[in-house]
Amino acid sequence: MESPFLSILALVALVLLLAVTGGVGYLTLADWRDRRRQEDEKRETRRSTTKRR
Image 1 (cartoon, rainbow, N blue to C red):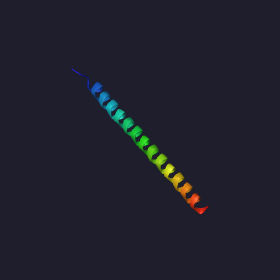
Image 2 (cartoon, one colour):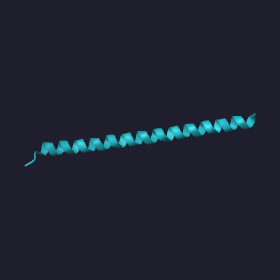
Image 3 (tube, helix red, strand yellow):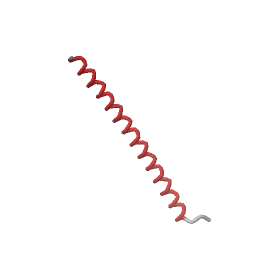
Image 4 (spheres, rainbow, N blue to C red):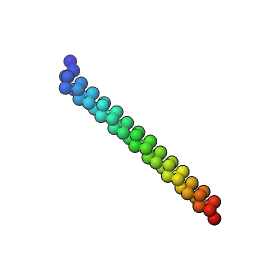
C-alpha cells in the first residue's frame, strides 16, 4: 500500500512542474513579442527617417 505522504509529494511535484513549464512558456512568448515589437519600431523609424530626407 502506498503512503499518503508519497501521493501528496508526487502531486505537489507535478503541480510545480506544470507551473515552471507554464512560466517558461509565458516568458518565451513575452520575449518573442517584445523582440518583434522592437524590430517593427526599428523598421518604422528607418522608414520615417528615409522619407524625410
